[in-house]
Image (tube, rainbow, N blue to C red; front, side, top):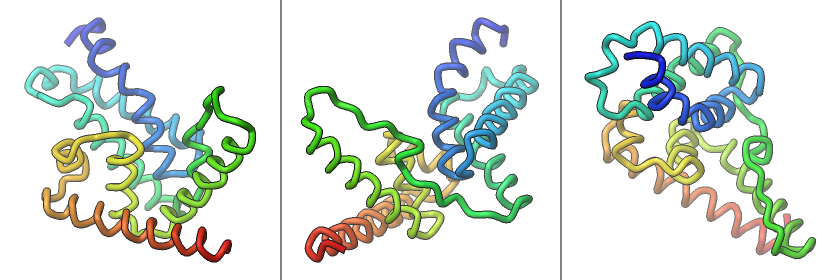
Length: 170
């Protein structure tokens, strides 16, 4: 693989890699370091890249593994809010609607942080990053049934807790 091919196949996914690493690590600097390590690993193994069919999923798997390695080394949990990783802006919304959306996103982020690790990963990859079920299977190296069960449970848990918050104003 030459530099041009590398730039065309790997660089376009850098933002997704960063968001995923940031979601796992909770730190901009740590996420940047992980993405840089991913690029170095991919570049150093560029001879074998021709046989990889889904470069994005492969890079996401490397990002997951490197992020989890860092977490194990530092022994800390990612608990930052979803707002730090996502910016919700829409010029057509009123200030009231924008404030309400921001508050809802804050609640969803807090509720996602309470989920078990696997459910949180699956929900983030599917609902925030927009990966297909097959890509999530490849990234997390789990069965399709596990992806579906974890996503179902995560969505239900967030939905139920969000309904309680909205119903009781807590």
